[in-house]
Image (cartoon, rainbow, N blue to C red):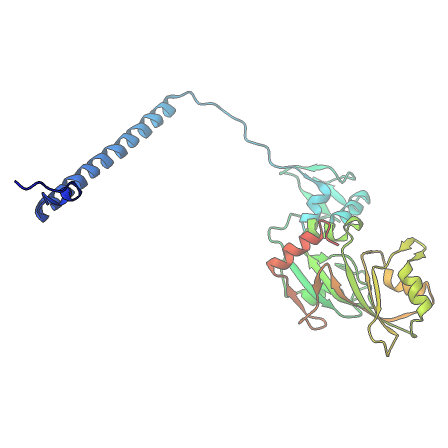
Length: 307
């Protein structure tokens, strides 16, 4: 008999196709059998654990207490004001908890407490709303006015049913970017002096700004309530030096107007063109739009220290 080369031995006794198919079927049957046995074992183990758990003694546990929110935070989350303004309302005795006046901002509100501000019941807002308004002149940035003057909320009546309020203030004769929201935490972050949120204004002066006064302002003037640092100052039009742009991070009352007044200029028109990265681009005067999710995230980043 002819000897077979070891290199080709595996081809010497080649099986028929039928034999190969049968072997494959046997292997497949064995695999299915082992798989079924594995899952049956897992079901049995799970049933045994369930039986043991049912037979085990019941352990009674007290329900975890609901989170207790400080009173000033509760007011802010109710969309009536910022946390800073909430402190003032509380200390002025305008807030009651279950009919009793509470003047401690850190008072912990219980889930069953009824909170009123100026005798009106308030509850935390469920839906957070963020509105960018291009404020026109002759509107004041308050939620209501005893003198019945026009407020910025009159311009966004159709925007939301939630109770919202302006973040910071623009005086009656100042126009431009204004954020309106019911997010008290964000309002607190954006208005807190330590966060130094950037604001840019376009100002029209009553006369051309001279170089010596330009330098004084840029160096930093001192007002009645302290120094007023300016980050950037520039002429908007070199041919018309009554038009200037100014960037600051202070949020003090009438700060831009007072800066120019301190060196002998009156501001005839003032427009805020940027606040914390928000601009009035594509928003006509007196109109509004909702912020995008990305803008809200960016604002919260600004509120945590981005200058």
